[in-house]
Image: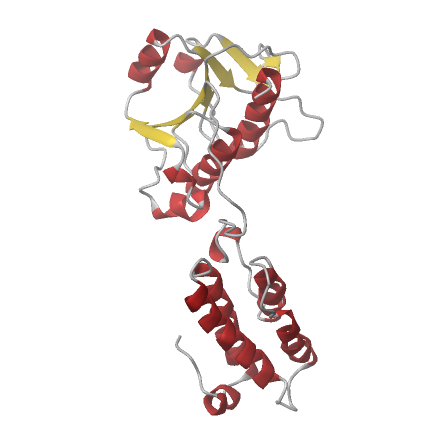
Length: 268
């Protein structure tokens, strides 16, 4: 979508005008570090908002959106774009996912070096690209050293994974392995303590688990978990205590809870 003149903009339906406005907001966010481009797109945003106020037939929600032009100040922060975008999204009945609007990068904050833990994670035959992407994001934030993607587990080469990683695949080291046995042998030669996260009767609870260094955490398929052949090669099997009717968590959530507890114990 390019820039629209006032006459053309006002000749369109209200829905179409809001779509154009939302697109301009998104473009401003994507070029935020470039001051000249940012100001150019923000100028479009302001014009579209002001032109909305001139439509006497504008809906009540459209009128509320048009008043958002007051947020466009010379010193506005990047996060202010959400204050403009969200009411438009809701008016358009858009179901916006986190990966579909606005980059995670906050250009208002300086970057900091990433600190890693002596903890690697093995994803064995995960099916969901969304889960893998979510694990990449958590791995970046929690300082995971390496992600091993085994079998048909999708990699960041999969567009579905990239939609959820939000760029974390560039900061988290990862590799793909076809055969679990070879990977386990490699990890053992490097003296990793092998831990499976599974809801089994013989598992010890995360609350009583003492995390050794270095450690490799194994996570299995969303439906079937880890194969018995793999479980027999583990040093320990750990479960997360559950209090609800369901006895398990989403694999990405379970990974985050386990990794946070490990980092807490290691005080890193």
